[in-house]
Image (cartoon, rainbow, N blue to C red):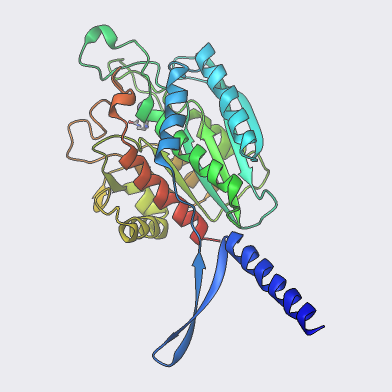
Length: 335
Ligand code: AHN
Ligand code: ZN
């Protein structure tokens, strides 16, 4: 009998150990200077930069994801299938959006949700379309060619797909909505005469006025834009600081703690009109932009910005790792 109980007890301990090892969170009690302190330790998944890199390669291989092209439709279908494959609840928000020149764009915002019933939610977003015109190319023959968009577009999506993959393995314990915005980069070519209002970020303008869930809200949002270049530097962009100063602090402090302070620098930069502006203004969700931008660089953005050389050659796994590990840590620690 004694033997039997001991064996049962052992089994119980073994099973409990296995359960706690597979949990994403565990409560740890430590003794420090005669004081008992309880610290919440969160097991944050390890971001795999090779995997993120492959997600970027895959998007670029479709060709430029310019709205109203086959590459755009095919890549959109692949994004939907990939999110579903990683157990997200997917909504495709299709809309005909009018570009600055009157062109009607067949646009699609793609939303992948985790824990859709949770009240406590975080929004992660990036644009998935690519720019129709390489209007910053040095060769004038390229000015009306589309950009490959490895960094400008695919990098943010690649990082978020890797986070989706990790969330399908290890539940983050709160609601997370990944939104791939369409038609961000259809703003008028630089050399065109005339001024156009709200020509950029058409997909996020549409979604923020017509969210996929009526009354949608989130605690905060993080936009990733151009997060894969070799020499990336993420400064603290002005709209982000204005609308979401606490989130800027949280993200930059997390990066510093993880050893990515060289990538996320404590330096301010000016206003960038990007998807986060409309999420802030229309939905009042404090949303920051992690964007490779410095006021004192020639273009502000990375060297190959809006040129036909925005390809895989400039994508750095080290940069992807720094961004991905920082963002996934912020998400899992918010639970
Ligand atoms: C403008 O330069 C107007 N917007 C920058 C946002 C952007 C363009 N992100 C990617 N491409
Ligand atoms: Zn762009």
